[in-house]
Image 1 (cartoon, rainbow, N blue to C red):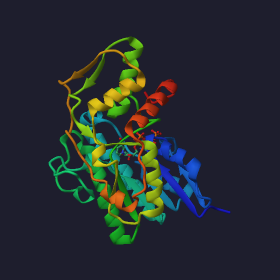
Image 2: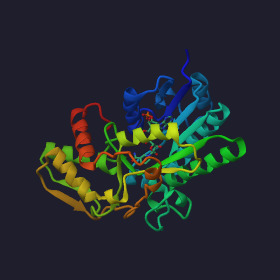
Image 3: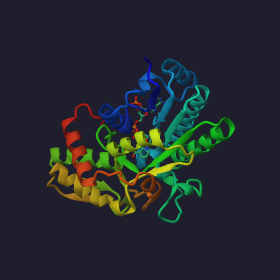
Image 4: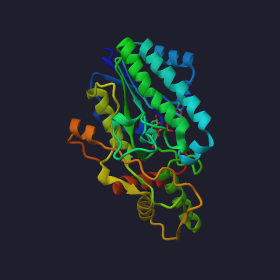
Length: 317
Ligand code: NDP
């Protein structure tokens, strides 16, 4: 008998997609079938390729993760690519979700799309309140448009399209490339090389900026919860609490400890810090899911460091 729910996960081979796969292996419901896509299944920035994927799998639900993703320095180098490719992917996936009468589509925004000049903590009502930080405006405006698309498809066609807003994500299977990665995987890779080559570890920027990090396995559990339980078009922030915000230098200390690196640590303040902070409120999540327990950052970083060391040959570097 065919499963009642066929859930198509775009970007299923990435950091978040792999974490959802792991969670689903443990807690799949009997009436569900999960399909995890990678770019090898087709280019989701192309409407015809996207249609043929939807036509092949006939999903009833979509978790939309696929995106051009990268850290601060890749964002600063390629704003036009981040804007155009992400607009195209989102347009194809959301339009096919409408055409194929998807019951619910949950897309992924990010806290780095919030206004640069704002009051803190940031909440879900503030996504469009002013320009994003100049370092990632291409990515940010493309992501903000998902929220607009969700509302438009809801208002015109009655579609249940919604979105989640995770803070910085980290975990196994991340992109650890030295040029293009986010801060935690980038530092893990650098620290690994510094230890191997007996050299100092150089950290870009002052180490002072503050961030809320969410472990990919926690985010995966929350994604599944949103798919099953959250019905609003309005986005929901998926984040640890404000009290769990940490500095980049604290993250570096944990990586150094996890990697057992004994060399010198240098902060290169000639490099950009990016936005100083973007503290987000998780009050909405807490009110709807008060019992959720987040992994503490030390455990998450130690597990990720261990994964990277054990999987260096196959990791995305
Ligand atoms: P990854 O870079 O790890 O994975 C990206 C995924 O998208 C991969 O599966 C990739 O496929 C797929 N993909 C990219 N381009 C295309 C395309 N043109 N057609 C089809 N598939 C494509 O991303 P993450 O898991 O880190 O991010 C998941 C979501 O979370 C994204 O929407 C991102 O914007 C958002 N997010 C991420 C944060 C982070 O800190 N990482 C923070 C907040 C939000 P393949 O593997 O084949 O290349």
